[in-house]
Amino acid sequence: MLSPQRNAVTVAEGSDEIAAITARYERRGPHSQRYSMLSPSVYMAEQEKERAYIRWITTCRLMPISEKRLLEIGCGYGGNVLQLLRLGFAPNNIVANELLEERAATARQRLPAQVSVLVGDASQLDLPSASFDIVLQSTTFSSILDKCFQERLAARLWSLIRPGGGFLWYDFIYDNPWNPDVRGVSLHRIRELFPDADMTYWPITLAPPISRLVTRIHPELYRWFAAVRFLRTHVLCWIRRTNSTPRDAGR
Image (tube, rainbow, N blue to C red; front, side, top):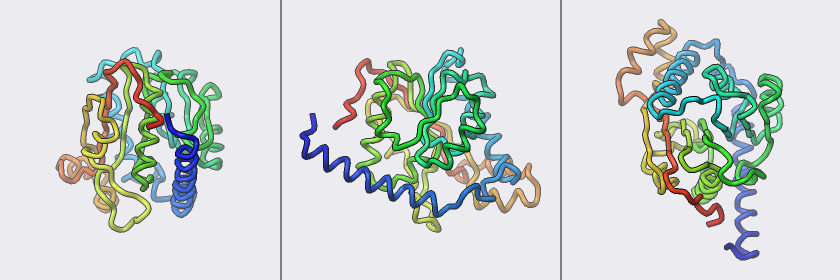
């Protein structure tokens, strides 16, 4: 158990990183046109990700998904939740968390009322241990540059997963030299964050700069270039909990 003094230091360090994450997201601006679903590079990548979700559900034998309880951290404007609802997840079994109030407000407008939207730091959510079958993060950890905070958050989220459930991870694995506000999370690092897990992963998503270039010529060029494995910059990982005891979130 952490001492009160050590716990106070941890909270202070976490607050500093939360403030830094908030500033990073604010620098990106609201609803950037670069991420609009009307852009061919965006909708082709989203269609690919949805197919990967289907492969994950079927390969990992998660049916019936309507019975699975899911938490998404860093839900943004609710796009991932909308995808999952289309695939059969039940809205009353979904909790969406977002750090920024403005994004959470948009998610509340877009999502069914049965979806619970919680605002705030995901590491401080007041949720019972082992209460979810699936915890999802999509390009959230790459915006967390403090490794100690990454580890505390991963441990806390791991404690929320029931035995037999898992962590669904979508993020990029390479650094972006033009964006100091993000850092790629390698497969080795993912295994460090979840050492007590079995991991299955699928490389997906054509490198966005290439995608934006080739889809201007024709959207279908996305598929041709994405077929080249080393041009894929993200991974979808299923990190499955096999042990019966949640990892200590206070380590």
